[in-house]
Image (cartoon, rainbow, N blue to C red; front, side, top):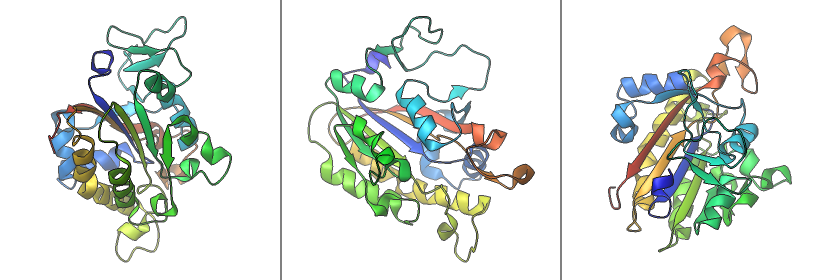
Length: 264
C-alpha cells in the first residue's frame, strides 16, 4: 500500500453481511462472472473479520485492521495507525499518524467520499453519523438502504454525480444488498435464505462493472479492497443473523487488486 500512496486512487468496498461460503460457491458455479474477472487468481481469499457486525467491523477497518488471513500469522497489513509494539507492520505497510485511515488519507491530499448502505451509515441518528462524519463528503438516502432492491445502482448513480474530475480520491462504498431483508432478489421468496443471499450477490455482480468504470475513468490507476465485514447465519445451530460468534459470521471473502486507468 505504501508504494501506491499518492499515485493511485483507492476504492474500498464492503459487501455488507456477505458469507464466504456463498460467495465462493457462486463464483465456482460461474454465477458472478464480473467478480471472476477481477479477483486475483479468480478466487476469493478466505479471511476472518475483526468483528461480528457492521459498526464494530468498520471501526476496526478504518483503524487499519482489515480481515485477517486464516493461515497462522503475523500478517503484514496494507495500512496501520502508528502505535508502539505492532507486529503486523511490514515494509509496504503505510503507517499513518491519525486515528483512522480516512483522516490519514485526507492528510495525504486525498478527497474522501462515503456512500453508505446499512443503517450505521444512514446519518439519520447521531450513531449513524459517526462513520460518515470521518469523510470529506458522505451520501446516504433510503434508496441506498437494506430495503431497496436497487440499492447498489442508486449508490453508483450518486457517485457518478459527485465524482471529482481531478485529484487523489478515496471512495468508500458499503453495499447493503446482501443484508437482511434480501428475499426481494429471489422472485417468489417469502423469507430470507441462503438462496436469496446469493441472488443479492448476483445482483451486485451485474452492476459491479459500472462502479469499476467510474473509479478508473479519471486517468489514474485505482487500488481496490473488496471484502465483507461479517457473515450471517441462516439457521446454523439454531442461529439467525449476526453479532454472534459463529464460523459463518467470522469467515468472510476478501480481495485486493489494482486496476489501471480506463481498464473498464
